[in-house]
Structures are given as structure tokens and as C-alpha cells.
Length: 78
Image: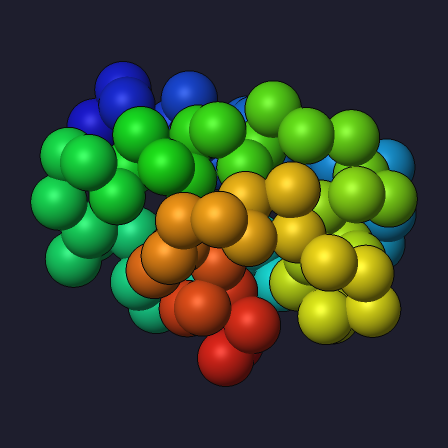
């Protein structure tokens, strides 16, 4: 449970839009992620808000474009 609380805290961002999308993602998908996907999600949370938002909305090419990012695909579907 502490891990989920830590991730929820990290999902609190400066952009309201990110708060909403990340909060929904946590509620709908986080529990079903495997350890590798959870680590991938943590890497996404390390990104600055504008970069992460651009990746989620597909307005700018992702820095992770060279690898398939399943978690990002889930975030884009929320």
C-alpha cells in the first residue's frame, strides 16, 4: 500500500490536466501493471510537466519514441 501512496503523491503535478489524467490512470490501470510497467510509469513521472503532457496528448514526438511505451499508450487512452 505504501508504494501506491508514493505513486499517488508523485502524480500530483502543476498542471490540472495532468492531475486528472494521472489520477484516473492510477484508479483504472496502475494495479494491473507488472513491475516493469510500474518502473516505466515512474520514468514518465520523472519528466517535466510540459514534456509529459505533450507526450500524452501526442502534440510532440516522445523522447521514448524509439521504444514501445505501453504505459504511455494506456495514459493516452484515459
